[in-house]
Length: 377
Image 1 (cartoon, rainbow, N blue to C red):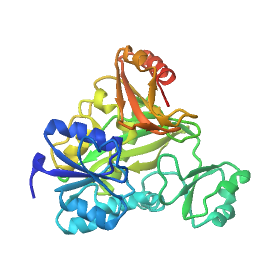
Image 2 (cartoon, one colour):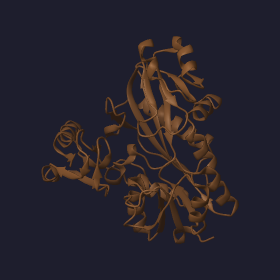
Image 3 (tube, rainbow, N blue to C red):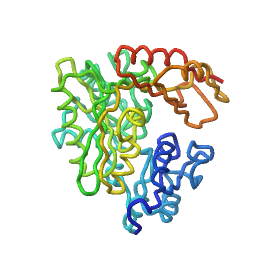
Image 4 (cartoon, rainbow, N blue to C red):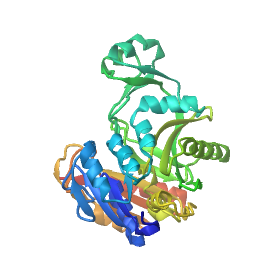
């Protein structure tokens, strides 16, 4: 096994997270191989690229054999293939068992309960009939156990009138939380057991697409809540015994409680702004953690906002970026485009980071970017 930065890293998934991970790794002369089912994935042109299915056992095993270390940028991968690669002596971070846990929201919630990690009350359900039978638990969120991603596999059930929208598959009913804010803490852990976290960020979601529209960093929360959220995030990664980067999404209730919503064992949308706004980006941190290097300083350089560039409703086809020059004229902005040629409604096409020492100015600039830069066809 090669050591340190000489290792060849394989990434399962060739989307924008993999792309930004590679961009960070170039600074360290790291060689990357990428596996993705989309021949025109964002990573295809900037890495050694293999076109193949992430859920196919033999494809993943064959891909991993040529790598020293394998990581992910998406959870929907063949875990049994990763376990086989570990048996063959390959390093896989996050570990296959962690990915397996997070692939199933039912197991994830049971893990929180078992380890006394604060989370919303829930009931496991096997089918639509069981959801209907538990109507007294409403209002609630019905989540698919597996294969939910980027807002898919989540259904809000406020009253009995919504029960027809319930999923007819194994899932869970999670009590609807009347929250004040949605925040996230990104935390990293290396093989040596070193743990470090980023300041909490505040997320604002699209009302129907269930995707982050923009976030602000650091979150506007009191120091007590910030400390609690930080301690919870560190507890989750430690109890999972996970190596790598973990994004912990949380609710802050109107009573001031902090509850874990979901986690992602990889670089995450809630950490894009760290490239410009923190001393160490989440992507560099993921590399440091998986390679068992000293973890980087996570301090905030400047307050920041991140605006997701989503494909506009009503447009599908070759992507065009309206308002690009106006945003580029705005001080403190940095545009990241993901190399996706085709846009469609709500597809993640890029993001913009804005940094500004003045919080009021920061919010005004974020709103300007959101209103001005549009992805059309």
